[in-house]
Amino acid sequence: MTTEDRDYSLEWIDEIALFRITRPAKRNAITRSVLDGLAACCDALDRGQGRALIVTGEGDRAFCSGTDLGESASMGAEESRAKGDRARDLLVRIHRSPWTSIAALNGLAYGGGFELALACTFRVAAPGVALCLPEVKLAVLPSYGGTQFLPAVIGRARALDLMLTGRPIVAEEAQSMGLVDRLSDSAEGLMVEAEGLAKSILVHSQFTIDRMRRCVDAAGAQVEDRGLAIEANAVIETMDSEDAKEGVTAFLQKRKPEFKNR
Image 1: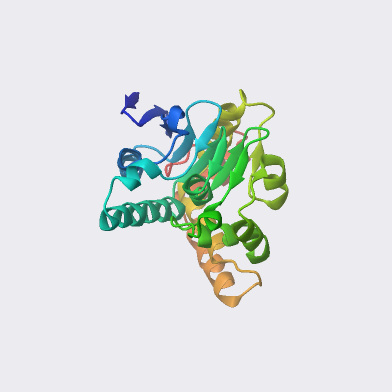
Image 2: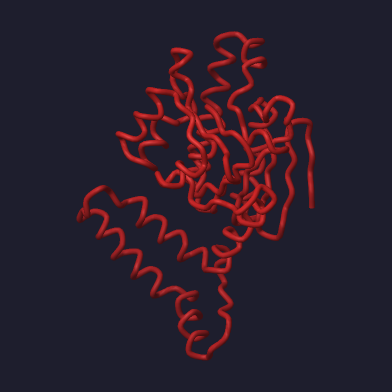
């Protein structure tokens, strides 16, 4: 099933929502229409229509170049600020959602586009794709949560390096930093890689996935008692679940498990 709007398209591939920004002439810049569509997609996922989200851009030049400055320039200061706040809240929502989100980077990811990618659970990139937070060159800050997302992924020093210089990095360097999780062999293979990653996760119990992510989210730079306590509680919850019993039974019977929480 596919739905289309002026600035985006949404296609459902089984339990995967494929959200594509369709503004290649504007390097897939973010408009209010894009935010509307992405929020509606998140609503559908929260209602249980699917369990994974893949976000990408149309064409081979840009995943997303950030906010549409032309649209922002036509707004008043209060309206523009409201758009920024809404975008930040939406990205934080994606970041904290229990369903898996994957940014399929088909082209450059700059500014808010890079922040959108950072909000996702995973980032898969085509070779040579460039990523950048160039806001410092305009004497402004990343405004969609990037100052928090980036150090959470690669640490304080590397995050400051990228933010204070505004320098772009290619996908290969981003992968060495841990910014890109998987690099496709070619641009044509990008969506195959992204869909394959999503499907390799979705075969498992959502109940267990939720608790595993809760444990990882509680982890810090050092092993802390709080994180260990969350893990211990999650272990008890999962071991008592129907899915865990089914997983062990299926293993012993040498068959594929049929999880209820999917």
